[in-house]
Length: 340
Image (tube, rainbow, N blue to C red):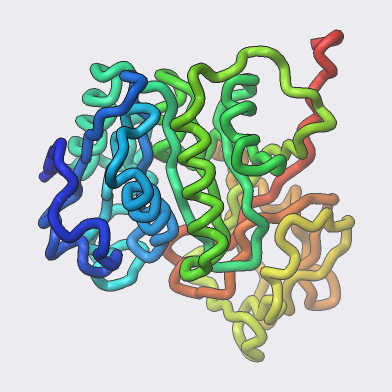
């Protein structure tokens, strides 16, 4: 299922993301040499509709077409079949960013393939790992880490001072590589934006130029660190929409404008039509459904029970069903170095 190559495939440097399935034929791991031997790993298109990472890599490889890379680079072109249709994943496929080692999903051929990618990169002495994503709502560019570790912070802050620490969902690429090396996920805004491609390319290039990743503490005032505490989904039995009168949960039509805003207790998110019950599922880091600790209904309005900052609110109903409605975050205070 996994293709391995050490040569840039013909046509790759001018291809569109939708053409990669025809060009590559399968998920492909490309190894390229560089002046420093330990490779930087970059995964793109784990979600087929999130193509900024691919275009960033394409731009980088075009820039270095006639010169050696500063460091060895391994690129994983993941769900090329979904990319051919511009979809997150195809019907019947698992989510390629929920089935890496450590996942709670059932085993299958895709899981075995991703485990092989991790094993191959471990044997190569991986230097650092970057997973590039887009999102469909209004979000700033930010980086995610899975460990409270200053090496991971240093890598992440090459991309953004806004960092999110999370340990769920399981089975994501950055979690799989975190035991091996500094590992980050970067969120580059919506697909199709040139500045997102440029930002991702500049970040990858900066990481390639690192001779080492610093271990000294990052000053707390140099980062805005948030901790994802809850993943919010809409149960299959609950009808929902955005500005759609009559839906059981009629969310604000511009709810994605609330992303990365600190919302006070009592903030209204949706009009509730019909019976109550389990309107949302809100899973904490231990997997418990804590929706009543974070939400309540008053006078037909779904409201926040406590102050939080949401991320990844989207208006795309398909994405809500396939993934989640949003994540809820709280500020994470780092101790100053002299106290840490």
